[in-house]
Length: 102
Image (cartoon, rainbow, N blue to C red; front, side, top):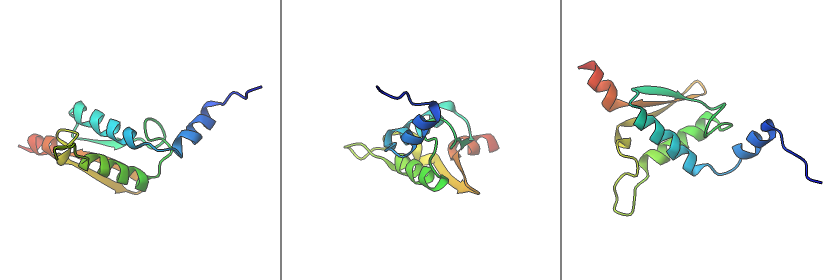
């Protein structure tokens, strides 16, 4: 008979798998939000269970991802900075922050 997995075990299993598309989802959602900056949750959501270093690397790679024509997959990604600090990861949209400063 099959054993039913609890939510904690499911999160644990998902945390060790490939999440390439998840980083793109986080980046895309951030760009669509129009927010000037966010702290990326590492304890819940698309990239739960990843270390801050893994999250920064994955988000940077998503930010730089290009299509077959050489254009960025995520429009506006060139304006996003990914910052890792004190075990946390932040996304800053420099185009939004510079508009607010004016």
